Length: 336
Image (cartoon, rainbow, N blue to C red):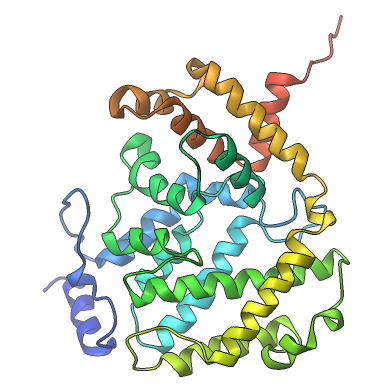
């Protein structure tokens, strides 16, 4: 028995009967030899952590576009906070922590530069539409490793696709990530908004904070405990009705007072115009795309609009700005 088999045996002994077991995965699109030390979901977690798309998240907007200050969240820190919350819940429920972490680390790989404002404009102008959760799956299935993808297990890909509010993950681990995503962004976006002096903790609606808590720490602790105690030894991941209603209410309040607020939205129009200009340029000049993107059209038959979306969605905020300046902003003429 090798190390992987020993770990799989420990899963059988310890994990909940409702967990996803590594040796029972529905597998990969391309069959591979098994690793001798890592179970399949741990292997997926490692592949995501080491991929280029994951590294680019550090320079992608969460809510505040190019904020001044070192402490505002980025898409990468959001991903890490989702992972931490999800792993805590999964471990407490004796579910598969490696699968949970893999889904959490991969759930936002397809996000555009400039956050949801970038996603919105690409969906408007791309002939085939654009959604970040579908793009995240495309990243791991196609775009990484020069068109070969990461060849992740079915359960990880399903969890990534279904992390959105309307999603229905096939595994409890995926359901944990779906809830953890909301818990993370509600709380860290409140923290960032307070840092931006948009409001104070005391100005949050008491009808929700009296239930959830009066600080980020209290709210995280309350919601995580609620999920664990209401999901223990059950075939579903759920919150108590009152807690879920309060979370949804606070989320709605955040949409009205933060996500649509003029402070984080101040530069949104410029960012969207920048992305639209880049899209139109590369649609007319596909020869300027990197070789690995042109090969998607030549070898896979992908459309120009799809591949241009792939390229732009993969850009970090900084790289998108640099590309725009390179293509559209005149340079000074220096005479020596």
